[in-house]
Each structure stands twice: as C-alpha cells, then as structure tokens.
Image (cartoon, rainbow, N blue to C red; front, side, top):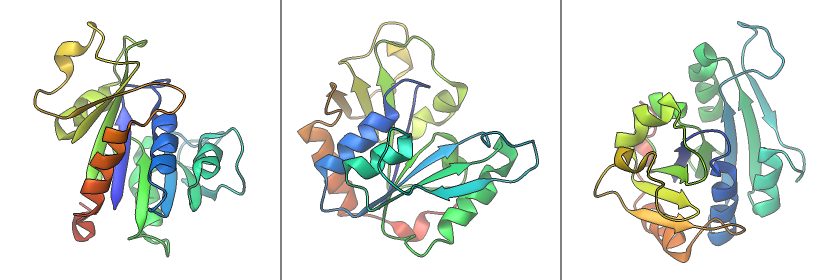
Length: 192
C-alpha cells in the first residue's frame, strides 16, 4: 500500500499522525519516508539526498522507527529535484510493500492508494501545496478536533473526517480506514 500523509503545514502533526498509524497498524511492515522539499545544507542543483535512518531518535524518520516502522528514510531535495528523489525511492528493493510518505508535493508524481490531509485547529495558515492537492484527499485528519473557523470552508465536503488527539494521533476509526484501503491497494498505478 502507498499511503501519503500531507497537510496544512509545518507543525500540523503529520509526523505524529504517521507514527500513530504505524503503531495502530502493526500488521503492515511500513517503510516510512520524510520527503523534504529542501536539501538540508546543500546548494541549489547539488542533487537530492536519500538517507536511511539508522536508529530511533527524535528526528522525524527516527520517530517512525520508534513507532515500529520496518525502515525509515529522509529524502531531502530542492523542489526541482523532487521527481528524482521519488524515482530513487521507487528503485529501492522494498518498493511495492507498505509505504507511508510524508509530503504534499509527492502527489505530483505518485498516485497513492490513500492520501490523508492533516489539519490542526491550533494553526491558521494553510500551505499552497496543501491547497493544491486537497481536492485529492481521501480522508481528513483533524488534530485537536473539528476544523477551526479560519479554514473550515476550505475542507472538501463528503470526505471522511477523523478527529485525533495527542498523544496517540490515530483513532480506531482512522486505523480501520487505512486497513480497509490497504486491503484494496492498487500498487500498479502508483507512479504517474
């Protein structure tokens, strides 16, 4: 299964939701990826960097491992190199298994089995990349409860909503939604 978790912006709780889903669905041998749209410390044009997370720690990829992911990666790339980073992920031997990717922009190149958009009622701003892909959301994860008035009208009608709370960040209903979609994965259509 390919599950993409994007969302409103920095601090929305995307990493925490992914960790919660990894814990809530241990039957999936998740490979989890933080796809960052900037190469940390690299000059433009320096190429993307794909790093295997060696151990559980406080980094986003480390949090995935701590939650029970089989493997975790950080894929860091400048925006113009994100397609190459996605191609590198697809070339990994474990591609085709159960993957969770944290990113909105990866939807430019991948057609996931499930796209969840995370919104946090404590935040007011919504990133342009979230707005761009929001119509493709299969589910909305609402951290802290129902949508705050600042962006309530942006959320697509008819899309399932899953309120979650810290510290777990994954409700039973959300885990069942992911399990149901996992049972009907369509991996042949993953790459656009």
